Image (cartoon, rainbow, N blue to C red; front, top):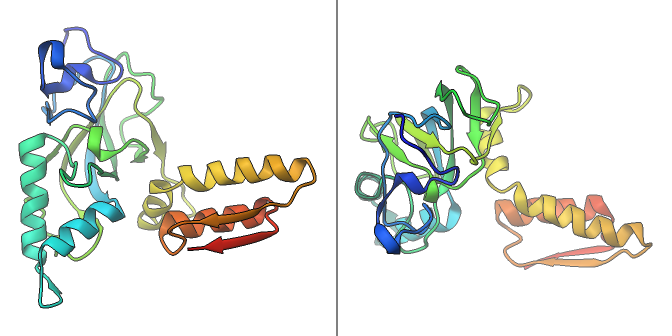
Length: 229
């Protein structure tokens, strides 16, 4: 596509439009066509990683007598992607992230990616144009990690990281999905430690992925005591 694009993806917003237009995360529907604007990158999707809050809400909605109806969860995820052009749970407002392989790179992209790179997106699925082409046929609907085929679009100012060689791809996906929280904890606790103060750190939701990694980061950065709630 040759028309001008927005580095934050405004050109991909289909609803709302005009004076009411919003950024992609707040939009009701995105344009997930595979054709690229000059500064975009297209990813061939391998796995979606639904965020914990989103998957929990979907699973609880489709649970009867203690059993999750995986087929119903799968059908709802498909409906969300097809109707909205992105994976954003309408109840929680959250999305997740994905791993895949760079399929095409626009000539004006500044993301530093090349065709063939295997990457994890570090921007939420709630703002990433996404199309699924396999009906999620390999997913049983019973876990947060979703084998999928399709494509996703990264904008000029999206973020993606090349997957490390020393971590299993699915483990890397889980870690990168929550990497922001422990990084922030490490920085804040480290600032206290540099002044000779060893703080006590309490984490609400300490049993989850983000919480447990944040507790580990706090301890490594010099926290005197860590508390998981």
